[in-house]
Each structure stands twice: as C-alpha cells, then as structure tokens.
Amino acid sequence: MSSAIPPHNPNSPNPSQPDEYGYGQQGPHAQNSNEQHAGHGQQPHAQQAPYAHQPSAAQGAQAPLSDSDARLWAILAHLSMLIGSLASVGYLGWLGPLVILLVFGSRSPFVRQAAAGALNFAITIFIAQVVLGIIAAIGWILVWVLVGLIPLAIAGLGLVIVWVVSIIVPILAAVTANRGEAYRYPLTWHIIS
Image 1: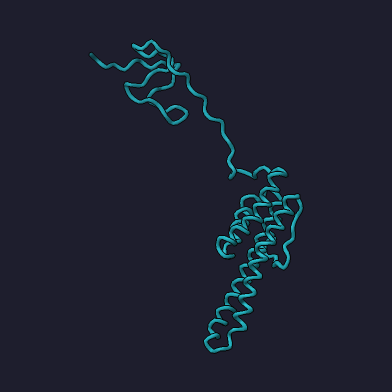
Image 2 (image 1 turned 120 degrees about the vertical axis):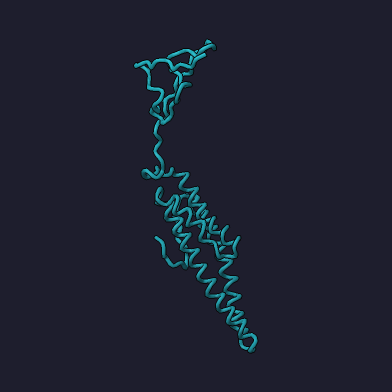
C-alpha cells in the first residue's frame, strides 16, 4: 500500500500553506475541503465565518451612562466611601470613590462630580484622622508626665466626631444622588475636581 499524495487542485487552497486564519493542514493528511471524506460518505463541515471585529474599550471612548446608571454609580460612590471607612476605621474610605471616578467618571459628569466629592471628603476625613491620631499619640505620651489628659481627651472627642460625621454625611449624599441631584460635602478640601 503506497501513500501517494493526491495531486493539488488549483481551485482549492494549497494544503501546505496556512489558510487566512493561520491554520492549515500539512503533509499527506491534508484534505481538500471540496472532497468527500473517504470511506465515510459524509460531506465536510462548512467552513465557519470569521468573527466580526468587536471594538474594545481601549480603542475609544465608552458610551455615556444612562440616567439610571449614572444615579446608581453616584450612589455607590458615596456609599463605597462609607463602607470603606467602616471596614477600615476610616482609613480606606477613599478607595471606592477613586475606583468609581477612574472607571465611570469619564462616562458621566454626574458620576464624576459625586465620586470626586466623595473622594475629597474621604481624603479630608483621612487627614483629620491622621492629625487627631498624632494629637492623641502626643497626649498619650504626655499622660506619663501627667499633663496629657487634655490633648488626649480633645483627640478622642475629635475622632468620635469625625467618625460620626463620616457615617452620616455619605448617607445624606447617597440619598441626594438617588434623587438625581448633586451633593456638596461640607467642610471638605476640594482637591479633586
């Protein structure tokens, strides 16, 4: 039994060359797509059309958010600050608004304003906590010298006030965003616009 290579049909693609998709059957096992499968009596499968090119997000600007999606992401920007603050005792409240600002801020001015406001408020809260923490540390050191009770009490009271404000204000902001209105955080340094 000899294994002769069948002659090449000029109307079919060259089996030793890859097809347009980079694949091709090589050598004596290559089959002509126009021939029946020998011994099986079956027709070959129809060649599948290539996938249409789908544009990716990196190729251009994304579509703007609908009003309901913009309200949802604005609410989540405010509430993510609250959740981050509660989960980390206030130190990671900036993370959620930052992610929402980076992902959805370019798709909706309303979401950008809400996320930037929440981020600014979270940064302000973080700075206040660091300053009050330093005051508390100094007060704790001075307690050993019997003069540090006042700074320690001030820092402790300040931290409680900051903590309560960091819970109440994002809830008010989320309720306002749910109505589709912009919220301006009080006592906030506007670092991000």
